[in-house]
Image (cartoon, rainbow, N blue to C red; front, side, top):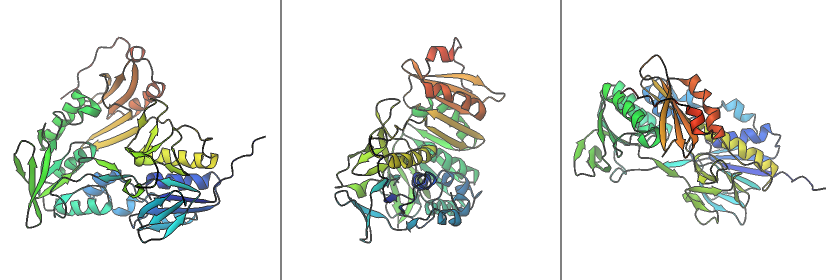
Length: 411
């Protein structure tokens, strides 16, 4: 009879994020009673990031509403909480995490949940008025600037950039949204829905510069004066928001011996080797659904993967369950709520299968090969959720859409 694996006595989680919090809570909920350390590079208790570009930026929420758990709840987890102490290195041979101050934290199992580092545009370093939206401080600084109703350029029309533009124009800013793609978000939503969203932004007063790449932030006397585009044009601005994506925060893992590429490379159970697991935005795992290395930058994925890692740590390497979620993400822009289940980027076909009473209420299915790979809903939350099972099953496309003709998307 094979003995059950001995659970670790010391677990260290690096990243006081949604994924890190889900991992520590999952471990305690599943009965883990050993030493548990949570390391965070920010001084704050774990907080939610999606509202940074929405409710916090608009002033609808204060910072306390971002907290995912109260101090009392965290105290109940019996954590060694290390906030404001970034991890600087990982010694897998000694099984120790090295903090920036030099302290070494031993572990039997380590969870890497360090998330993302936002990309910055050349010329932005040290410039007042050039912003990313990754931390509470980032959002509060930009919110303060919006109070002056600036001329603002948003570089990048992904969800964060589009949300920031929507909040800014509502606050009275003069906003230009620059998208490298001819149709913003077309790679995720398809041309028709992307065109519809661009039209909504224009209706609210946002100027759109499409098919243009921001190559530099311009400045004078240390303050932003605008941006330079790839075609040589310049757009004047007092504030520049850089929504040009992010990269996995894995610099501190250099030399650790872990396999690093587009994040921490893991097997299907989120195990990276040497007692190390990864969760959240930083994890690149072999997805059972596709058989391909996959990395997902969604809030729900962070929580789901953190809990999966907790289960698999207690099961032990080689005994964990493959992680096979249906990704979910949402975006709020003006009076539109956009919800996505599955993977829609690069889909072979998009078909609107349901419409609501309003011209911008719809559900669309996305095809990869001959299978349903995703669903997008605009202001149709219950109906969109109803198609999730088709995505999870990878349902046959022709059976899913039947003989319906593709419905045009309202502009």
